[in-house]
Image 1 (cartoon, rainbow, N blue to C red):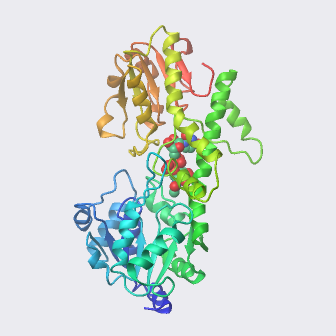
Image 2: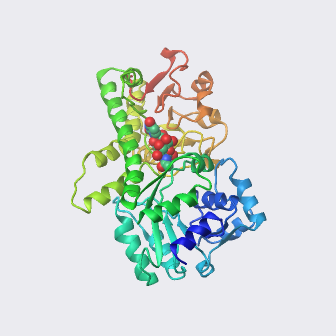
Image 3: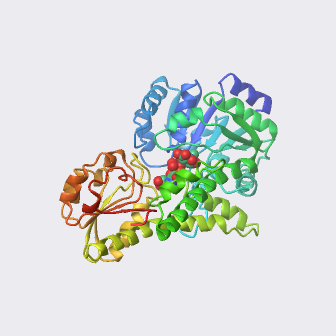
Length: 441
Ligand code: SAJ
């Protein structure tokens, strides 16, 4: 198949697609293309996942509007099917790779899943197929890892035997389909023609801009946009520490700073979690360090944000001391375990390091989270007999808490607020030892 044939198959939707990786990115992408009339094969080696998808069961946790229906429709129409067997991919014209690209404890990218997926697909892909990497990768991974691996494993030359591009996603939990449809995307191709062909493909469900670029630009945009957010959050967190020490109120300061043009100070908080923000800056750093560019700001921002759960413990110790209690043997109600408000996603949850620190100090954490089965239930029951309560996540449910009821359930009226959930209604001030992150207690 040559470029023109592939272009035509994309244009008339006869191109057969494969989406490798059926997680929170790959599955919605597969369902969206099937919904647009393409023949789509979802590929995932996770035991039982293909069977679950073929039974029309949505494996993605959390509330994802429209996804379960789109998946069912794709399966019942026969346009979407899932498999764990790469041999079934020999007839595919387009491969979209959306597998995980984690960083390890030393912040080094671990491309095991990516290498495995590429090795398997290279051994079966037909002549002239298009391979698109959607996974977030360090700058130059396309040129230095993906391209040579595909050429070596397939025996084909890029732009002759296969075409190659990088199209990073901008999904968010709870908004997977919405973001895939409404958010603009950078469409990086190894050649401008490849980029144009990819744009023609994604136009089938993307309603926003599809911006042509080369692969290095696409890799940089994705990692930079998340590193940007991490640095901005770290700045807000560092200002919170300054405000506390100066006897100020970072929340008031932020509100007034943001009245100044071109300022958008982010929200200070109890920590930074999730699947993107804590990871993507390290992909950017890794790409730079490999080329002798030593970065200081982006790693420093990571360390500021990772220190916030520990700062919350310090606020707790100070608050307990003010009511004559030690953290040793104290029972502490920890409100919020997911990484983000009104979500059940616990990836890289800041509460995890908070809980570890509490144990280290001889305290006994009692975790509550309305979104997580293991920790949900009546919050007042959970808090009963605790020496303090800490808020780590701004769940809507916590904004409606009856503080008088909360206070009477606690053994001592200590409340440490890491997300400014209670500032407007912490009840009778004097009765509470209320400690708000970023505001002098
Ligand atoms: N956080 C703060 N202060 C802030 C914003 C966030 O402490 O001002 C914390 C949150 O509590 C959370 C973490 O940072 O623990 C990440 O929050 P997030 O709002 O960035 O949510 P994510 O992790 O789902 O980020 C995604 C990203 N989207 C993609 O990677 C496609 C990010 O680029 C988006 O900017 C973000 O959603 C968004 O705007 O919602």
